[in-house]
Length: 223
Image (cartoon, rainbow, N blue to C red):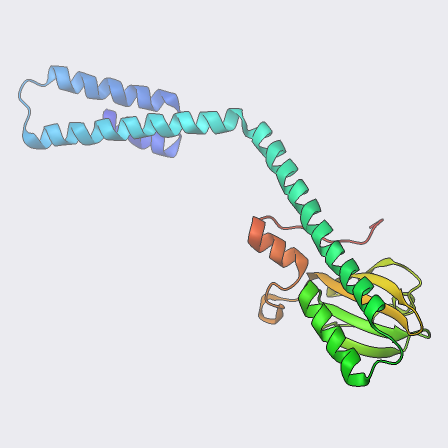
């Protein structure tokens, strides 16, 4: 009877089958006069199974009774962490664009300007960093950007912008470079490429999922 009850608990977890299994074990222990070593070993194994079952049942009940609070707490922690990571990414883009705008000059040589763009992009960890003239013509570039940068970003008409392309989504931060034009820092927030063509977790959403274990969806405001 005890073995049958344990089997029933394995299929339909609950307190009742465990109680029946315990009763069967106790009854067998008192009602059986002669016990072989094999029977004694079987009783020990059954006792261990019942104790393990009670422990698992108690843990399950505890999780079920506090599940709502657990979910709310995890959502709050994930939300706070997401805000923190987004703030870090935004600050990195702001710093890259502002520093390039401060250091670059119209008199800088081609090699010097390109080296500066490359160094600042790598030090701040942005996806791409660019320098445009006042008409939106590209002067210097370092990094990777798939698709066309929006024209209002190229001309520095907005400090912050989000470019939503069919397969990619970029966050842009611009800064005016006196006597030159506009600096643009870009961060890849999302990519919708299939796994064989994915960028290797280089976008913000993939890195967040790898680090935290939660997937996020990046969509334009008002979507």
